[in-house]
Image (tube, rainbow, N blue to C red; front, side):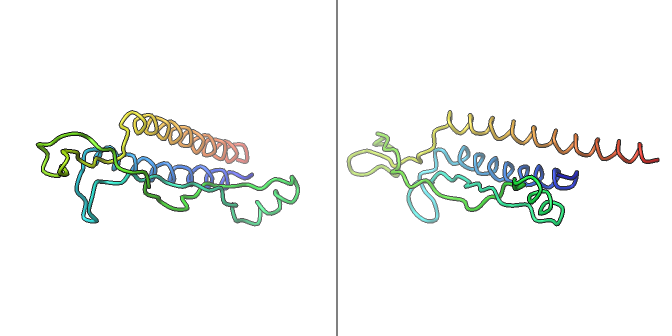
Amino acid sequence: MDFFSSMNVSSSALTAERTRMNLISSNLANANATRTPEGGPYKRKDAVFAATPVESRFNRALDNATGREVRQVEVMQIIEDQNQPRMQFDPSHPDANPQGYVAMPNVNVVEEMADMINATRTYEANVTAVQAAKNMALKTLEISK
C-alpha cells in the first residue's frame, strides 16, 4: 500500500468516526426528549459501517500480487433504534399517559459514553496513522534529495 492509499484509508475512518461521534452526541443530548416533530420520544441513532475496496490502479496491482484487498470504512446508513421506548412512572409529566407513565427515549447514557470513548480512541489512532504516513513520505523526500 502506498502512502496516499494508507492516508485515504485512515481518512475514511476519521470521517466515519466523526459521524459516529456526532450521532452519539445527538443521542446524549436527546436522552430525555419525550417529544419529537415525528411524534413520540426521541429514537436513538447509530451508524452502520462497511468495509469497501479502495479504488486505485496501485491498489488493484497490490491486490492481485498479494491476494488481499485494501479496504476503507464507509458509513452505509444511519439507523434508528426500533426498540420500544422506556416507560417511566411520572404522573406529573405533561406527556404522561392516563396510567402515569411517560414514554422515554431508549438511550442508555453509560453505553453512549462508552461508545464515545471508543470512537474517540479510534479517531485518535487514525490521526496517528495519518501522521506516521505523512512523516514517512517526508522522510522519503528527504532521502531522495
